[in-house]
Length: 217
Image 1 (cartoon, one colour):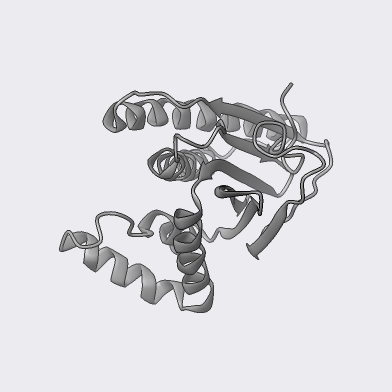
Image 2: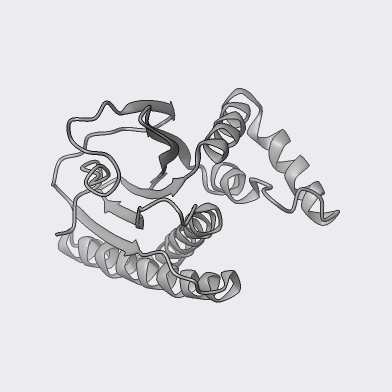
């Protein structure tokens, strides 16, 4: 059964209901959403597909998500007796495709395949916003490194970080993780970002991380 954004079915695969789960939130992460509105839920099981091929599949998934959004958005405009603005619709569609693709690439690239968790992307469509949430499993070392990057992003000027990331990308530096995609979401698309980290003291090498992106329409 697909779950609406906010009702994350995280613990059934990794953490038992009676286990103590530690949760850390960063940035603009909102945990609870009602079932109102349109939503989409896609899961990606761990495979041995080469990274390059997996990224091609991510592109197909991002295309599907963007077309799903477009059909929904046009339908809502028609319901409101509003003449659809094709330029606005295509700009929003391109933004949805870009954000979905970047989130999926990050999730697949950094997924620890020893963690028994299926990576997922949720898309929630509201009257005034689009909310993305990607979840994946990583190990404790990856989690600590990612938290430091998140804290640096939240405590710094994103425009300055964006310029620095573009410079490093042009010089082919920091090829492991540049953060350029996340910074582009903030600086180019005006999106807000948040993160949720879930871990369990009894399973020290497992962390479930959720990245949430909110885009106003």
